[in-house]
Image (cartoon, rainbow, N blue to C red; front, side, top):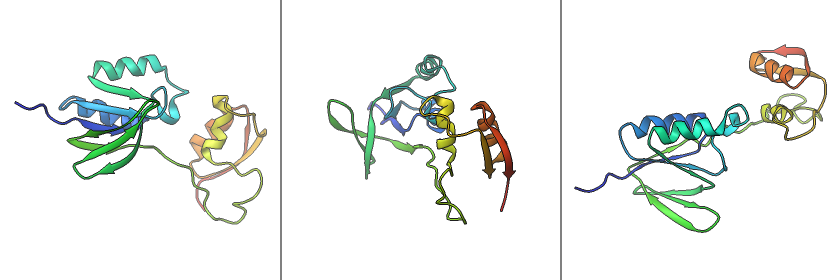
Length: 162
């Protein structure tokens, strides 16, 4: 009997981890992560060792430091790490590469001091200096307001919708 082709999950953020753990319950599963530790944007909120135990306990073949660069019919996932370029033949592929902040072209969108959610979270993660003390939040007020407060800032105004 032939070995079933694995499910290949690209991205080890919250969605990729959930997909990999779910898939591992029914098929061999490989989780590709271009970063050194799992967690994606929430990696600073979790214990990487706990997440690794969770993945290994579910039977997920977690591969840190591996980036996917193409998907070909078959399906085949083209990937690379520090040492080589290679491909993986998959039974199914889940692309869970996360979110990217986009600034919407509203009046003032190019003004100095306008931050995306990731830019606002950077000081909390210790990745940059704190940009200021008072903020105006546009959209997703509860989460952004909590992030501002966690960074030691104050929300001057929060607007949920335009």
